[in-house]
Amino acid sequence: MKKKALFIGGTGTISTAIVKRLVNDLDWEVWVLNRGNRLDVLPDAVKHVVADINNEEDVLAKLGDQTFDCICEFIGFTVDQVERDYRLFKGKTKQYIYISSASAYHKPASGYIITEGTSLANPYWEYSRNKIACEEFLMKKYKEEDFPVTIVRPSHTYDERNIPLGVHGNKGPWQVVKRMMEGKPVIIQGDGSSLWTLTWNADFAVGYTGLMGNRHAIGEAFQITSDETLTWDQIYATIADALGVELKAYHVSTDFLRAVGDPLGFDFTGSLLGDKSVSVVFDNTKLKRTVPDMQTKTRFDMGVRIALDYVLSHPECQVEDPDFDSFCDKVIDAMERAKASI
Image 1 (tube, rainbow, N blue to C red):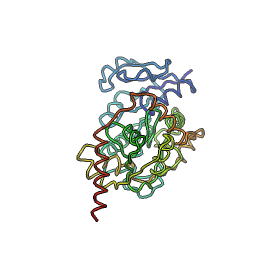
Image 2 (cartoon, rainbow, N blue to C red):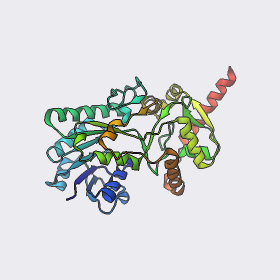
Image 3 (cartoon, rainbow, N blue to C red):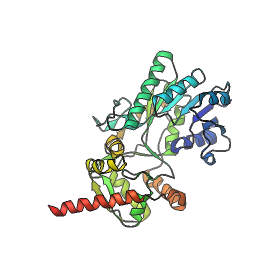
Image 4 (cartoon, rainbow, N blue to C red):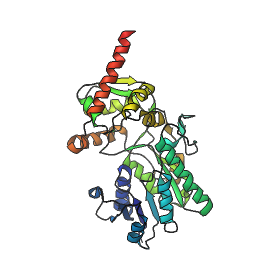
């Protein structure tokens, strides 16, 4: 008999890959509960429940007395949301997997090698602090009431619709790609030498699905990332190589980007100081011990070509951001004038 999984969300960068793997390769019965957006990305075999998860009465009415082997939460960002899930699903699932974030690990990092035992603290990003609070609530319920929680901490995970970058505007990465293709300089935070890890979503799905229904995962936290580590200069150079253009890197300190960018609404304090400016190398030993099949097969130079091919052939992914484009020009001009004045 098939195991049953319920996804809260289910159509995002990470969850879509997991749903497809479960349905196509692992033969689960998969339910997805969301508001009905992007249904075209889901396999036909998925059972879809259209509901707002915040409307608990409606959710209960539509799910009825259904129970699940695993409930997978992808859109829980604050404690009140996981408290809601606890009310809805206590006693109705054998496992509740919560997607947290690797950005929750201590900033500034006490060491660049990250394990699940690395302390959690991020004074620079409210998003990360909320994830930490969610983890604490859920683990308290596990310890006191045996609520079957598993915590998963992704880092920078991408798919064919996303080009991973360090510095971009609020409308996504396209404007940076466009600047590269136009021969313009692109801003890289710091001196470009800090270390980062990028994970293709289908590789992430191998680790995640290996935790589903896994007794050894209950009451535990796992990070799921690639084992490939690159500097930010290497990341940008790989993108430029895939585009067939010369990379014109322009390095700007994170502190300067924060000072001039945050007042304009870019929140570089959170996204950079609270995350991408910090060198990290993830030790996935715990995950591989629990999920022996876990390995990442898609190097960044492979994945980014798939992503660029998709984005370049889908105009709807090419969202221009003139405000960010202007911001880049002004920052670079200001830096050059400062150099000339000394």
